[in-house]
Image 1: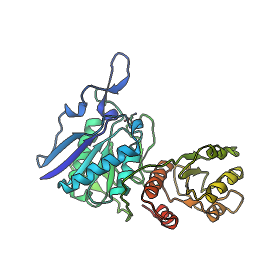
Image 2 (image 1 turned 120 degrees about the horizontal axis):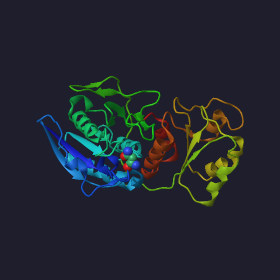
Image 3 (image 1 turned 180 degrees about the horizontal axis):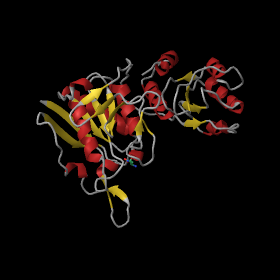
Image 4 (image 1 turned 60 degrees about the vertical axis):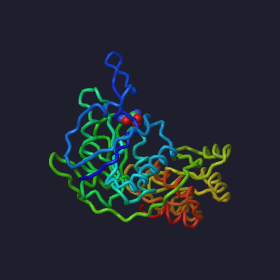
Length: 323
Ligand SMILES: NC(=O)C[C@H](N)C(=O)O
């Protein structure tokens, strides 16, 4: 028999729609607690309503609370964990759990794009699929996965790509690693090894700045507030307008880690171009290229690295490693 720890955190999956106004909001009681699932009788669920929040209200503090509950759950002997979560920041929570807990236990994160009483509500079926994946042998050793719309994605690569469509979660460049069908759970890709790093805090000011044509010296705005790190969503293969350089050089001189990803939906950033602001020169200046993460996940990774008190060279190594 599989013992699964279910942690509900809120989000649309736990909300309902007011049929008169169309407004979607949290209901008195989490609707997932009132609906019945079709499950293998060999699965026992321990269900906890750990938060009841829309996911834009989720912070790294909440992620830390989830992580600590899961680590306790491992000691309590659970075989897997299912987390229901709002979809807006689901990928950040999933990635945080992936890099802090690693592959100790399957952690399956799911949500819904339509609230519980809307036509075509997807919550219950996503929830059921997540429990099936958490209970299956093949999910062991794969870390945190996101199960939505019959697909299985890694926490590392998955991202929300559509504001409202139920097929919103995608893994650009790499694709899903598995499928949930009526009778089976199938995995089709082998995963990279990854480094994980447990932390006991998740503090720090780490803004994300997106590059755009004509951004000029707008990074100077950062000089008004002390920051602990910076994530840049650079252009193309990892380039920036030259007017951004003085602000970046000042931050580097102050030993503030600057991590760069591409703002492109597919592909990875690398130091190729040797012109002012080109990726090759940015890399030579000490900007850390973070391979194949999007900016919101690079930010979570940098937050974890800073809270683990890594030295500058360890931090660089950790950020550049494919985990
Ligand atoms: N579909 C959703 O769950 C979106 C909602 N705004 C949330 O993230 O809580």
